[in-house]
Image 1 (cartoon, protein in one colour):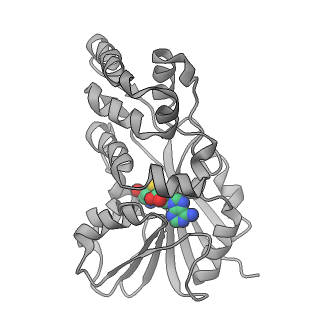
Image 2 (tube, rainbow, N blue to C red; image 1 turned 180 degrees about the horizontal axis):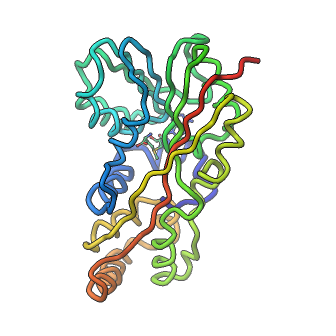
Length: 273
Ligand SMILES: C[S@@+](CC[C@H](N)C(=O)[O-])C[C@H]1O[C@@H](n2cnc3c(N)ncnc32)[C@H](O)[C@@H]1O
């Protein structure tokens, strides 16, 4: 995902980038269709969740809830999962498959001001969302507050070199793009542990294995135009020239390799003030 300093502007996120799930879906699609990994991202996430039987889980910035919808059949009947996001548009799409499933509750809520009592959850997830919140420390304080003693959290994010190959290609295509993605700079695989440590006694990093080998040009154009940086710097009438540019690379090499750097942190034992 590529972006710039606006990526924690909450109005931009709510009203433009995540007003609907379209941008997120364009990105999820490319990961789903062109991954070189043997394990899906959703499976990787599920593998790192605890047994939630009889437990309460809170998801912050759940987006369109892809992770929860794909794994829906794997949760015990007595699990309670509260999905939250600041975007009503995201929640509207998330509601689709989850409506009528009493294990799930969906609420519009800012992750930095949680409307829950202290010590009310066994597990909290904040996947690919903490780099968006204006005050990460305040949000982590809220997570520690709502976790029960012994509770744990998961925070998935990207590394500093995440999809750098795409940024380099986009710069070759449109030099003004000039770019390195910066969306996850504030909270990434390199700097997240030190931000989690003040709130949690134990922090572990788990890396996801899998890059992208993209063999179709159009999904890559859709991906590029889902990002804030491309939307701001490359005119819409460049979609077709960009498709032809990617296609030429695909014709030459059979595909385009885009290396990823993604993973998650598991943090346990919230430190109480
Ligand atoms: C990149 S998406 C990730 C969605 C989902 N967690 C996933 O991993 O597929 C980031 C989500 O965070 C949400 N978000 C951004 N700032 C937020 C905040 N302060 N509180 C709650 N959600 C927020 C956005 O609306 C968006 O749905």
